[in-house]
View 1 (spheres, helix red, strand yellow):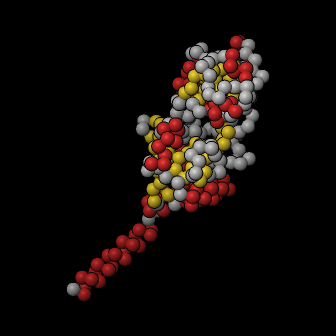
View 2 (tube, one colour; view 1 turned 120 degrees about the vertical axis):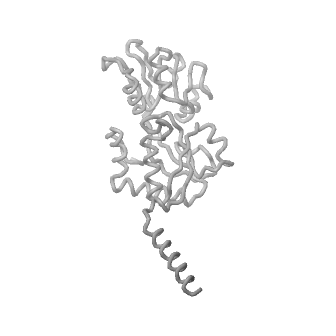
View 3 (cartoon, rainbow, N blue to C red; view 1 turned 30 degrees about the vertical axis):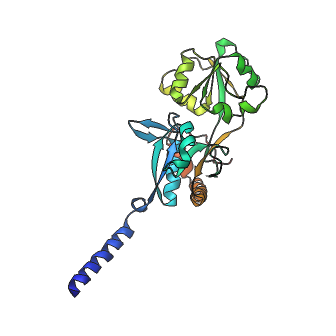
Length: 262
């Protein structure tokens, strides 16, 4: 009996030592988070696998904090409506006004939204109100995110001449098919899809960029647990400091991204 107890004790001690020697990722607790897909190179799905710079940033931050990421792709409108009763630990790609009552992290990346037209159409966009005269393709909820609903010169909701998209590859195709006069989206997303869909015009000056929204559009994550929210910010700062943040962007061929908060 004594020998059996010693043997079992030795086995338990060995198992504990093995566990301690395992890589941190294999022992990490899992966190489930939502991501809005269809916005390469920030995030998209490829053969059922989630890829993109935003995904890699969040995954790297959480790994540094000791957590394994379990991602799920979901449209933000559905996520916001179901988040309180869901099993999600956090949601990404949000504004401070989204999901009130939860802890929002610092902005971990930002978009630069622009309006693009075909130069041959001779469209003058001196201010956002001029958009009311044209057919506009815009990402879903970007109208509100850009504050167009609060300008006073624009309706409170997207007017009938605006077509909203959840998948931005479809938005880009829509514009190049001539079904919209103006497309409003992040500059990097536009270039990414236009190049990969082989839709960029041969003439470099065939398109005109209208910088109607010069302010950077920072996005954040919202956590149900404030301690996890604080841990995210600490480890976001850590990957910026050690160069991992910029390395992620470079892996997608993007070199001109500023560090968060700059």
